[in-house]
Length: 312
Image (cartoon, rainbow, N blue to C red; front, side, top):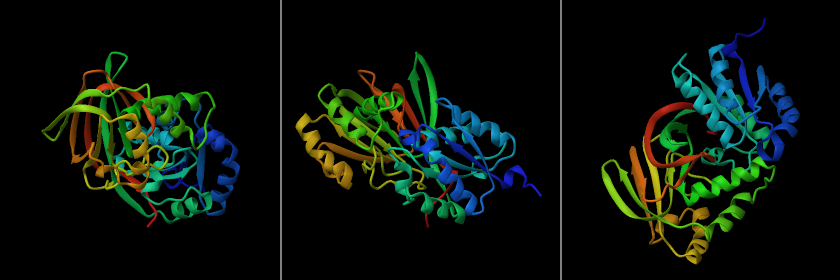
């Protein structure tokens, strides 16, 4: 007897993820899912934001379990689909990931392997937690838009590096060192901006180089920009990097990887539920690696709102 939709897995595959690893490795991933007893329906994304639409459509058809085969950006689109559907509460959807992207930052927080066999084994166990999400309002083409995210948002210098990296990916230029290449190439062109940051009523006004707002700990392919973030504590973790000399930025890159960035004298760390950011010069935004728009921004935590499969 054929299973009902809510007993089957929707598998959303981004064929372009990870220098087309989504396409090249799908046959191998599909065999692993079949061998582990998964009853699944695969769908392939065709354009940017298609994963969001597919998720909404298939939840309306009765699917309640979703696997993302893609990168952090594909995961972000599926999460936004879960929030934008109005059929069931968001926590009724079980969400897992087989990561084939270049950054793979969301899975790092939960210690989910990028090796496919290990990732499928974790999915098979169906051990879940309900993590927080964030929603950000931002400006794009002279109107306000909004986007949910479940890992990290980057503003200022981070936003510029993400924009360059995404442009390279769109042109088929993708490799594990792409983010670092664009980080270095952007460094000498970028200028810090006078910025006002309001975190739960606390006001910080300073010349800001970059801001990371984390639910998870990692971004940029393994940088621990918010190393103390807990994905289910109902709080954003903020890392504010104030204006610093270019050589000091280069010397501090290692701190982003080893989790000691908060110890730098030019860095301030905070936690909060509601954040507003205004800047003298519009600064760029990325969430979960996806380039979106520019300031001003409003961030709000959506506590314990996404059910995800984790490695326990």
